[in-house]
Image (cartoon, rainbow over all chains, first blue to last red; front, side, top):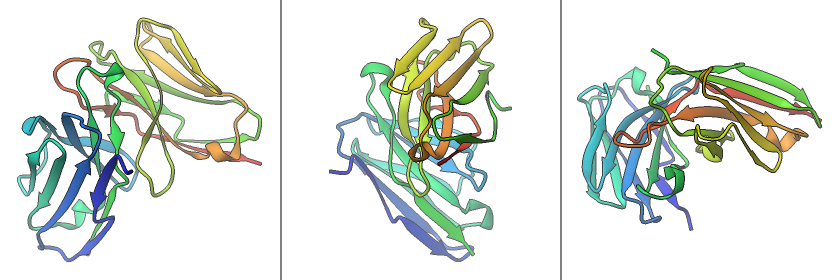
Amino acid sequence: DTAVSQTPKYLVTQMGNDKSIKCEQNLGHDTMYWYKQDSKKFLKIMFSYNNKELIINETVPNRFSPKSPDKAHLNLHINSLELGDSAVYFCASSQEGLALETQYFGPGTRLLVL
Amino acid sequence: QQQVKQSPQSLIVQKGGISIINCAYENTAFDYFPWYQQFPGKGPALLIAIRPDVSEKKEGRFTISFNKSAKQFSLHIMDSQPGDSATYFCAAKVDTGRRALTFGSGTRLQVQP
């Protein structure tokens, strides 16, 4: 019954590799997000999609490319991974118009680049 | 530029005590202020939220106090319990258009038995 799920939960990889993280929500929400949490636990928005359309694209390297095949899915592909990409990546979703537009977060994907 | 400043960075409270975490914001366009609770290894979860048209909101042991003129808001946890030990994040959002949350830097709360 997981509302927002992410795969994989852990990802350990070498510098220079390309990897993808997948996110799915079964809440019927129309907006999905990717947040990055760094080693100091600071949470920052990376991307936001509304009905498969990109609406927020923060200052994120071009190596990061989000893709939303449908409203329920938002994937994150990272090219040429760097040491500084090591972080926890959280997917979240919300519904426009619902009270206070609560954002529901997934369990996170812990990425470690060696 | 940190738009939402949170303090303290860490807090130790005895069981039964009151935990108080403070946040200040700069962007006067913010009009939704949630608090999120995060346990180790988990994603943040909404705890309580407030809009600036009220000065206080209470849900069980958790209360948000909001001071619009000072651009500050705080979380009070009454009768703090060891199970409240977690990291707490304040956040803010503009209601329309851009919907992403701007988070504070987090407060690690430890409630000692």
